[in-house]
Image (cartoon, rainbow, N blue to C red; front, side, top):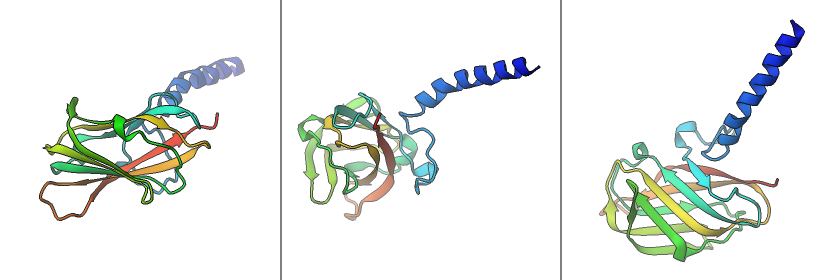
Amino acid sequence: MRRLLSAFAITGCLLAMPAVTLAQGLPGLTLFSGVKGDSQLPYRLDFGGQPNGWDRYRLRIPRNKVRVAVAQIAISYPEYYNGEFDTKDIEVKAKGKKVALQEVKWDKENHVIQLFVRDPIAAGSNIEVILSNVHNPPTGGMYYFNCSVLSPGDVPLLRYLGTWIMGINNS
């Protein structure tokens, strides 16, 4: 009986490992983050999120979060994040199609990237912001990237949509 229980335990662990590995990308299980579950946004780091390495961040905004048309996307990040962004290699997709950008501003002092779209993105669209040629910070850690949007003709106040809780690995 003991051997049978041991075999079940080992099998269960082996079957659970791929699920845990898969959970690291989008955003996985996060305990004690301070961000409510419905405010966490999905993301993917294409090249593994290694410290001091080059990466591509795919920051996703699900359609249920996009309740208004979007004229501007603002991504703020913490002061202690000291990676580098390539503003010439940023793209936005809505409903799987590339969106023309009017301007991209990276305000290093205030820790925010502002993306101004040429034509507003319709409410209810799946949006993906792709930051290519990102140089990750030299040390690993957890970084909270906040997403806010501005509607066309709206009072110039950004509306918070959610947070990407991104992990740069030390392994």
